[in-house]
Image (cartoon, rainbow, N blue to C red; front, top):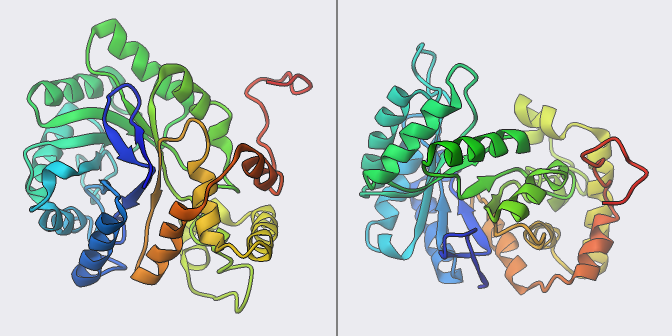
Length: 326
């Protein structure tokens, strides 16, 4: 396993991280334990969850992970998130100081730990001034309840705004960002990853397989009616573009012609971007997990990375001077 430095922290993390969104939902507790143990065996030391994971938005995913890490807590980097609504009450979500202070205590109890290593803003809350949210994060860091604040699912300008506020107010800054990144969803290359390089932020990306699209599940073989892209409206909207299926077909053919598992190659490609510290993988079972873990064996070169990128479409540049190279 390769380990990389998380931004400016000095913390060493595995270039593959384990996302536990399936724990307590698609994977029951027994299977979650098997997945966890296999990841540990492979050298993964980052496990990512959220207060809404587990199928019932009641912290079950955190609770399962908490039981699993109880005997090896200090060997691991544990992240969770706050902000996405749990239920439909007027204060069951958001990033107010009140909600953050309530939720961090629940997450600490669920995870059976005294601190959260990386605490993400899951998504920004337009009702709450960012200053209030960042002040709450700073207080949690001073209290020792979180080690580092971080942000997910945000635009580069929002991340930059947060960094600016933190520096102006001399409070804790984001040390890590968590954007979506895979061969068909490359928007983060335009500004987020460039910002991360410039500001020396850690980058832990998610969805390297494009919800299974880059494994060939939806483009080769039986083309099932089941699966998130077929049944979940969010994933239909996210990956429903016919162009994405065309790219996936070319990519899967490319991998198979070279005798490489498409899932492994997709993960290795996402993790090979110079700004990416680690790529989050996920699994419902051990078979899926092994496909992604095979990325450990792939030595992605800059030339190979460029060749694979050519199967996709380069995102437009950040400015309208598209005739000029970066």
